[in-house]
Amino acid sequence: MSKPRVLSGIQPTNGSFHLGNYLGAVKQWVELQESHDAFYCVVDLHALTSAPDPKELRENTLVSVAQLLALGVDPEHCTLFVQSHVVAHNQLGWVMECLTGFGEASRMTQFKDKSQKVGNERIGVGVFTYPMLMAADILLYQADQVPVGEDQRQHIELTRDLATRFNSTYGKTFTLPEGFIVKEGAKIYDLQEPTAKMSKSAESLSGLIEILDTPEANAKKIKSAVTDTGREVRFDSTEKPGISNLLTIFSTLSGRSIAEIENDFVGKGYGDFKGAVAEVVVEYLRPVRTRTLELLDDPTHLNLILRTGAEKAGMVASKTLAEVYERIGLVARG
Ligand code: TYM
Image (cartoon, rainbow, N blue to C red; front, side):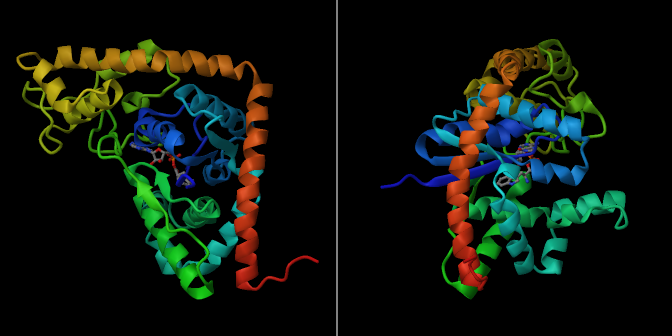
């Protein structure tokens, strides 16, 4: 029997990924590549919605690839590629746009938040059509599962709606994908503002743990994380959002249960606890940073991985696209 398929993507916007990206998504990518037929892409076209500097975008795309490899994504066990290398993503993206209602797209939370922030005159149309391109990413590969963080849940729902709509109008073509969203780690919070998600677009970087930051800088940020009133190290996301976030980080990186960790800190204060969290995070990320920097020294190797990935992805994607074009009535090129 063939393995179930997974697909996921990550934006190369900032060079370094943050801990939320890893715990919410990439950690699952690494686990699933063993048991699944996995396709993972760096979504450079999606990154264009934030108008990055061209030189930085190019660099950050390779930094993203190197980081994925350093975090354990293994091109021998998955197909790793860059989205813009497989043109079928744009082609199916357009078909998805034609299938989506204006109101439906307007209800996407990420679009609503961003357009409220910058206003209708300045928000790009790309931010509006972003979820349709994401639906195309997923549906092209007939993915069964999509490992992502909590913030992508609504986009996956839209993808399922579009797939269902297409299948019922034109005949069964797409697999209905499910979000693979873990219980612990699907939403990591900002260390300074533990009710907001950790995000690269946060106003201050002091609550963001970047995978490629120096061990010293990350240790300092964790030790200065906002804590809650009281002294007890106990998981309670309403009363103690700061401590609960640190407990989640500690538990997911160490593989120990939250109850065990709580137990270890009975009678100890927040200072001891934060010191221990800092150590776990720093020791976990130290080899990742070193390995990323080594990989970046050999761009030819990275490009070769990407070329192979694009070829494998392209074969799967063009087959789906041909079927879609056929079903919707486009005349095949003679
Ligand atoms: P992006 O690049 O913003 O984030 C990559 C992944 O990290 C997860 N994530 C988090 N998880 C837990 N806590 C957080 N604070 C946190 N912040 C981010 C995201 O949920 C995501 O899984 N639209 C996607 C990229 C994309 C995609 C796709 C994903 C494009 N096409 C197809 C899956 C399938 C995005 O912007 O992710």
